[in-house]
Amino acid sequence: MQRFEFGDLSLYVFGGWNEIGGNQILLSTKAGSLLLDFGKSFGRWKRYFTEFINPRSGFGVRDLLFLGLLPPVRGLYRDTSEDTLIATELDRLRLSKSDLDGERIAGLLLSHAHLDHTGAIAYLRNDLPIIATGTTAAIAKAMQDTGQTNLESEITYLNPRTLNDEGILSSKRNGYLRRPFKLIGGTLPTQFANRTPSKTKPLVGAPWEQFGGKLGSYTIEALPVDHSVPGAVAFCVGTESGSVVYTGDLRRHGRWGENTEETVRKLALREITLLIVEGTRLGRSSKTYTEAQVKEALHALIRQHSDAPIIVDFAPRNLERMLSCVEIGREVGRKLVITPKDAHMLVGLSEAEPFWRTVLEEVVVLKEKKARRAAWEEQLWEEAVAQSITIEEIIRAPYAFLLAFSFFELNRLIDLRIAEEASGVPSREGIYIFSNSYWADDEQILDLEVLLNWLNVLGFKLHPPELAQRPRDASLVDNPYHTSGHAPQQDLVEIVRQIRPRAILPIHTEAAGLWHELLRGEPIEVLQPK
Image (cartoon, rainbow, N blue to C red):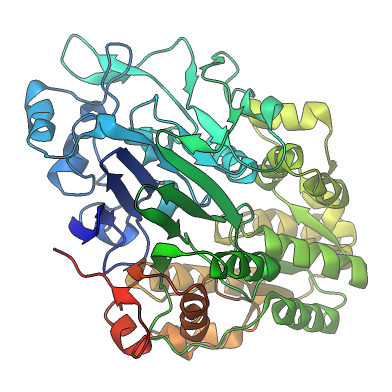
């Protein structure tokens, strides 16, 4: 934990200081406190956990507190007679040693639906209000509905846990409990909020509500910004000590770049006391493509291979890339094929922002044979919200589709090749476009090796071809089929200079010290830890 002071403002950065992601920030004044995101730090997490070593859910927060992956704040975590993550009095005693009081926290401001900002919410007390856009809430719920059912995933609703006879925490079986989301902007996705992920357990508890603009003594304003996931916002918090702005993650070069520009223009007209600013790409010199340039590069490559099966691999919440692929498909005569998980997310988004309904109507959804379907997928097919398609149908005209498959859908291509053999259709070399981020850590290098093995067996060529060289320096890979979700250094400096706050607190960066040089000559203080 790092502590910062600026006048009557106190800030405790539990995650996000000298690291990228894992934002967990507590803003505190005499009148109370607010949490700004509560994410998972993948870097610190990987120091202790692997595929076969995970936190023990039967002991609640114990392992994560001991390892310093959750801050020791009493009154912050789930701990009632109906639902607790505190397994023993020794665990409760560890929390009681903290000087911070979680009961003073009025709520959590959630900037967007990426796990490095949401991934530790599961452990927070279940009555803590979460302020977010309807789009962010819908994405977070869709990811939870379709993901693994475990303690860590309990972001928008939770499985109440109590101690069993052996002193181990176990989940109840009578229903899921919704978290109290207070939604700001857009349409309230009430129906989607009430959809249970289970065939036998209902969703109960706090309904999602519209946010009224005040939380305790604070006034809260959400300001839209451009990021690789829709619904992302910066927050402007009115306190007795002045206005505090938290940027979340932002950029200006994406599909929603005007959101950031308009927000910066608004803030430049105000007196901002403190700007808590992300800096993912500080000190990095990698090229910045706009989403328009990415779309143009994808379009050119896809048009070159008019009769080939084509896969475009992009992140599951990168909906701007999905939009680009839908638009390209429209222009070249290919329908975008998405997975049922993607379609479920679009169902939730359609209620928060009706625009996404038109996207859902234009794509086709892969329907596979399964021994058992989850409740959310059964509902998807029963409601017939989108056109379905099978692998066999794709085989008949592979040139008519773009497949939005990721690394984790590679095994579907076995069915494609087998179906080709069975139907006597000549096998064409496929194109696999990596339209995703590549950091080249040890884990991702191993995944790349696996990807290349699959593509070799299946007869698909990887683009960009430089990735096939297994680079260890990701900055050397020029990938015109992807763009960063974060602003480059030059844009960050321009944004800070336009807003001209009295002080900044750099987070979500490994190069916070660069700000002293970048703001040389500016009357802007760069906060340092106490």
